[in-house]
Image (cartoon, helix red, strand yellow):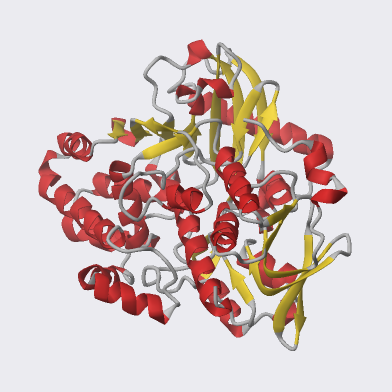
Length: 514
């Protein structure tokens, strides 16, 4: 659980001595770090610029009064030991580092309207039977819908996941596994809701599938690409959910360790002011301190809004980015409660992850759906003896938190925290009385610490699109500039942004001849 020391972070010797690199990555989110480590493993000269004091972005951590809190979600895909979709395992292995993980026997415990209360256990057959027991009249539809999800997953899991922009790779992978490639082409333009309705008629079950999508895509099934759903709904049973020992922040810490082993560098407290261009080409990065670093290729792990409206002049936004913004909008941010509670509040056998919703009509509303992580049921060392961590978060827009005085802001945070705790009392009686520590984060917190425009979770479709066909790959219309992370193919989620990182590094390696 050791973090970089102050001297390690800020000593003059930790600053890169050379100003010229093969690749500069702006931001050390998981997508940025996977890009950096993959390239460093190929002997490219890589520099990562991170504005904060530790790596990871929304996959980071913070310590308070003996608790180690995850900044974001604790439900981690990608640590399986087989197939090709175990991208976090592969990313760490590429730079010769390992990370102990703890298997999570239950992916999720749903607490939904109309008494729909069920768990998603790791064994697929057990989950399917639980769902069929609640909707026996939809047995065939359930089997066919989730069967289609497995078809998607098996296509993905049958090929090495690299850049779909690189013709040589596409030719190679097609000849290696033509059926998998053709299967993916079939599913790329499709959305999950269309396929669900093809087989399922029960309105409550369709609402449930909306929630199955919403908790990770922040949109209902109609707007969720089938490719993404196939990954999530199948890999939770195939590779499973595995929690990193020491907290989610260990993923980024280990990737940085591997980056440095391979000769790459990371600079903390290095906030990018702008991407430098010459003759329409990205050639470097200027920090707010005035330092300038140049590279053959620049990678932005910031959102596309931050990249093309802040790091580059908004008035010079390429037409392709304007078109993207017509298709996609910013998802809301989150109201986050980081709680330390007496262990007696959490009964033995409680699942790590929960979702609470009392009214289907409020699923997407601010403070509608509450997502809960209790990572200490898997790793008790994250909290003092006799206590648990409860991380609860729910959607919230930046507009709710602007224009407040400091005291108004603190008062509003406390009121919002109280509302969430009151609702959670339904599934965790005694939560309020057992409270030892509480910290509330808002959209403003996410904007400040994660550097994300309006604190957004990421892009969501403005209207129904053709699956993933509208999501851009890593190259941008500006020569020398690439994007990586949740506003590139295939979208949000740790394993998804790791995919983006593998793809970005592969495309750059081919472009630079590594």
